[in-house]
Image (cartoon, rainbow, N blue to C red; front, side):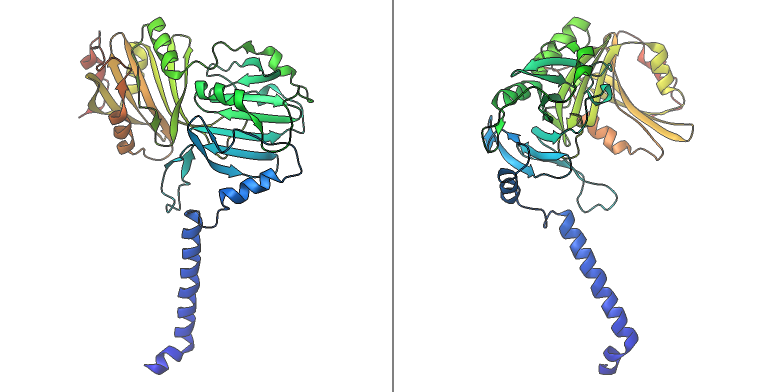
Length: 364
């Protein structure tokens, strides 16, 4: 037995196992953030940086503690996350990067070139909105507001009412810098419409637009996975509610979309097109009939959820992928849905749902 452990082949195998075990342990530790710089160390780097000023809200704001700091790198001056990270996805899954959304995210970057129309944050209908706040120009997008000061771009991202309060409280991390007119050309903002009620709370905005468009709608709570209920807009006759994840990797004031819920007037042709040839699974949402559907279209997998209510339909979780879509995720979305308060149920549909479901290739 002693000879066996001295055999060169066995020793080589043992060495390989040790090396790969070490690599695996290092990879797991990296995914768990063991080697991430501490927030205090990152904040010290920001505080003592010689470059352009970083803008923040202090170590806490509006009941939210500072929980994430990223120091300078490339165009980034600094990034600040306030509130607990809402994470989604396993850090130990090698095939999917875990995501993390913060209740309030501030990203400060420098710009080496003038603003183009493509750089301006857009609303859902593709237009843009502008305003002046604290004496400087700003663009209002679906996920927050981007301010242009000197050669800097300061994105304040989160729910509109929280963003409004945060902008009023912005201050430099160190020194006595002040917000100042942009030194770069921001004339593309001149083509944007003036922002209307940019800091109206989402709940009030939803209620107002739902009443104006006569459309019942639902939400999935304040958070769904790593996405926060952050934007509600009327695009023509359609009411859209969006959940977005704001954190590292945001560019031009855009957070990552997590869930989009659309309420629109009932259109039999559109619904029939969605359900044609699909496998359909009956379900209910707040007392209203609904269906989880999936179909193959030109080699791709399409799926989504349709809720039938009043003279409208509510569609959400629509996906189009080259690989099969897991229905478990769609069922989880359905379970999270609820009508807007004070309603506890959705109105019954004013049209023949059974006739629509006849378009499904298979109904369960």
